[in-house]
Image (tube, rainbow, N blue to C red):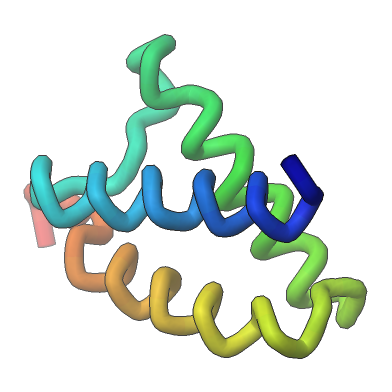
Length: 76
């Protein structure tokens, strides 16, 4: 399996999780921790300009999806 195939597999896994559960991966659930770490690492790579151009567009769409389910402060 190539690096690109692994990246796409993880991307699809995160998208399916968000669509199925209507929430972002939690840092408190061990089974979701790998997805959260993948998101954080790729966000960091994108912000540093180290992400491949063909991945940037897909990842931006994923970030837009995560913004929909962003945690809100209950007191606001």
